[in-house]
Amino acid sequence: MTESPFFDLLEAREPALREAALMQALPGHVRHAQAQTSAFAESLAGVDASRISSRAALAGLPVVRKGELLERQKASRAQQPGLDPFGGFSAIGWRGLLRGSGARRVFQSPGAIYEPEGLAGDYWRMARAIYAAGFRAGDLAHCSFSYHLTPAGAMMEGGAHAVGCTTFAGGVGNTELQLQAIADLRPQGYIGTPSFLKIAVEKAAETGIDISSLGRAMVGGEAFPPSLRDWLLARGIAAYQSYATADAGLIAYETPARQGLVLDEAVILEIVRPGTGLPLPEGEVGEVVVTVLNPDYPLIRFGTGDLSAVLPGPCPSGRSNTRIRGWLGRADQTTKVRGMFVHPSQVAELLRRHPEAGRGRLVIAGEMANDRMTLKVEAAATAEGLAAALASSLRDITKLRGEVELVATGSLPNDGKVIEDARRYE
Image 1 (cartoon, rainbow, N blue to C red):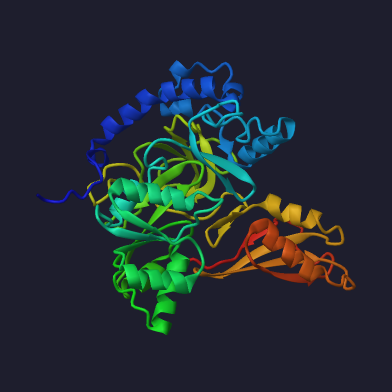
Image 2 (cartoon, rainbow, N blue to C red):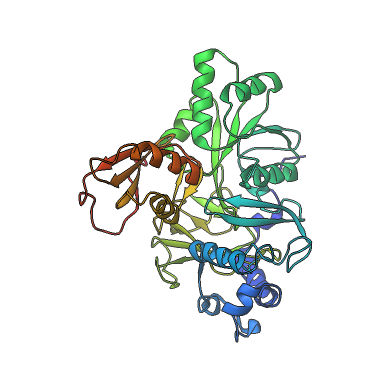
């Protein structure tokens, strides 16, 4: 029997059938969000859900951006501790919450933003991306995403299990131990950030550890430039990227055609003008806004803060869903460093901890897989010990290491920017 190139037949259905199915499901999704979440009951008060059955109608609803998600969660926790840590956006929870059941796990992303995981198999719908990257039932997948606090490890493991893979929970760090596990267990593929895969391949070559069993990879959490893709391919690893968030799950994924990323089947995509909710024409770069048909966490018009654009025409792989160009940067100053989000609010919190510090700017520089984070802070020349204290706070707040550079008062640009992404994407 010939192996299917698709995870399921939904990937190859007629685009008109898909669009009709999504628009048919949309009114019920809006109605459910209004009834089961206090956030959407408030923001969509007076909206007739039955009329939200087209993209034009959807575009009339407000965009919920990550910053609002964070602020509503903080406000909810401050007003009624323990009652609703999700800011009114979740339809599930556990005993003691407004929604007293339905959550399998809860995670914390930097910020801190909390995300629920429901009981559905492959809750974040990662199986399509993993299958498209070449993983098949019976494979052993070495997963090097984090398994604690943040959801990435669970996201990927759920998808790998849905494909039929066995997983090794490598987690992050401990490069030597992970390389030894690869040499001992001989997994067929790797799932994790592209930067750690590069580090692992280089370390294996340096130490003589045999990791030649790795023939495929599904990478995410960071930009994946063609230069690194080709570097890995030259070393026998065909790596494909996915685009997902802890809030929305899988949004789009790369296929063997390597011509953009194909949307997941449960996602309604809009590309909007940054800072607005206005949809842009096909081909124009704007913010990725998604409505995900997930009843447990029914986000409607969720602004990811990421920039992308729709590509014309179908994917040569035979998948018929809309394609996007992939990650083209951030619509706001929030950025990713080594797979972790860094928010402007975190820089503000850091500076608040040190009243002797003036204005600050976090500069992310370097190349892919070699990010360098430098916090530039205006301070008096006599601020003894401030640099070390700031470096400690930087690691405490962002969970990432970085350098600190004290600069003269008034020397930083007066442009309102607190995070500058100066990395080179080839």
